[in-house]
Length: 284
Image (cartoon, rainbow, N blue to C red; front, side, top):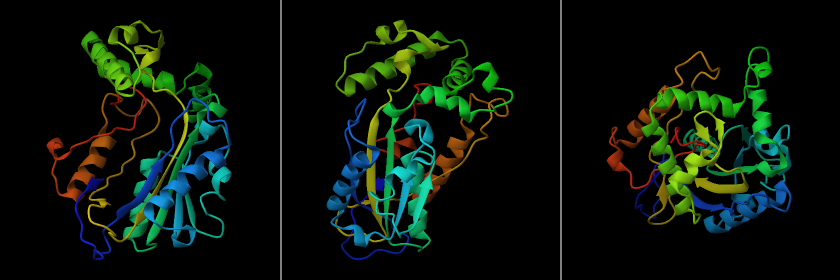
């Protein structure tokens, strides 16, 4: 997504603008229910967009059963996202995937205003234990393979035994914690226990409870509105062992598509801010 100054006149149908958004604070354990958590984000996003429930044509929700520990975790939020008697698409992935889906719904002229909501309440589940169910039940689950084990295998391939890479990951981790108001040194990161060689415990993104809501619209309502200029999406082969874990070919293809759509080529200097969605520094 990128920001540009827009006129107050309605733009071409292909334009998709962020009309309003809100993210709740992330906590290790939100005291209320999932519905209460999500409703707070939705109400604030609608207020920021200057719209109400009747202005929303469709809803796209993003939730992952592995975080909530629930089957069909979107069922917990159907009412509070306004999806009763209204089209809802549930994306079992992160909020960015849901946003891309909503953007293309608007560009396809299926809807004009779409509410996108993502949530996770990891305090309700044993997240890492549940991730074992994402791998092959015959060959991998009996070996105790889960998402942490897979991340360790990938990190080992990426580092290739280079201790300098491990130090870079420690620097990245410490910088992120410090920027968020915490206190952590690279040395402390490297001294934390290994959870999946070579990944240290401090390198794993902390789990938490939180929600985000975004209202997307087919028109640009005000000058300076955030307008989507390019998106890209791709899927890598899921099963470890059937692709090269040291590369991110799917990510490259997705980026190339987004760059081309935005007309910026491959130059990273085109960005003022880059925010990755990942749980480990070797991915970042």
